[in-house]
Length: 87
Image 1 (spheres, rainbow, N blue to C red):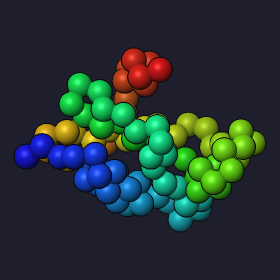
Image 2 (image 1 turned 90 degrees about the vertical axis):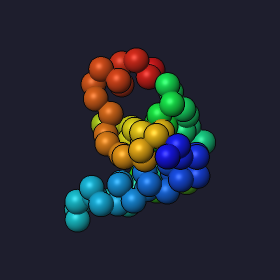
Image 3 (image 1 turned 180 degrees about the vertical axis):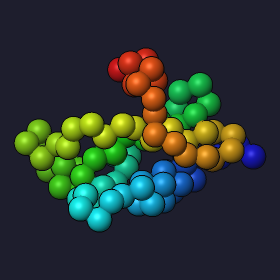
């Protein structure tokens, strides 16, 4: 199974919601910054407030992008090595 962009975003959003702790703000995928790298989808995300305002003061730090496997649709947070390559 190869997944399409819309499916990757849907799965990423589900993964993000499932990983959210009760004390964390609501988050969403930054759809405008999603990209495909080597067949996988890289989904940056941040708080709903930041995504609405794009004000750097609202930006939450340390939001590791979600990687959605382009073949299986499995989701995970990116690794430090991947973050360095994805800059």
